[in-house]
Picture 1: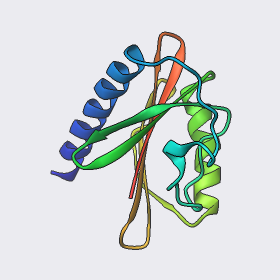
Picture 2 (picture 1 turned 135 degrees about the horizontal axis):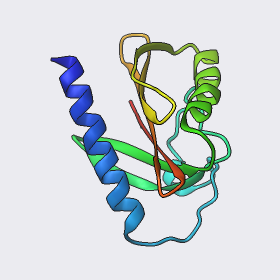
Picture 3 (picture 1 turned 180 degrees about the vertical axis):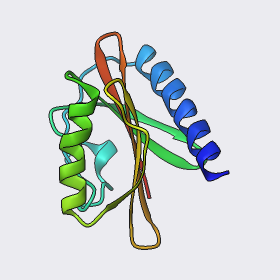
Picture 4 (picture 1 turned 90 degrees about the horizontal axis):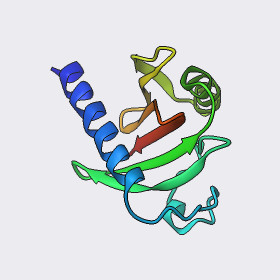
Length: 131
């Protein structure tokens, strides 16, 4: 049941990320904690390096933070994995392959980060859902 829920969440995230990246303001935003959209970003959840922040979408009461990058999805995942696991998060679920996928990390009983990455028009779209 949880796996089916995660698959549905991933599909929803992918669809929302595509819609969001296809519409609205294309103005570049700096990726840093000084960005007002990232002001409440927790210090133990790393921002994905070498990415452009593209905005926030909401799904099921969660903020989905969207980023874009160039490169291979599996390499983006490997770099992020090294950063987040250094901060005490443990990988609980992984559907990553060379074309992208989704990974869930948890820390303690109440902390979860869902990381998804896929390629859209030669750009990697990264979505992070955290609590």
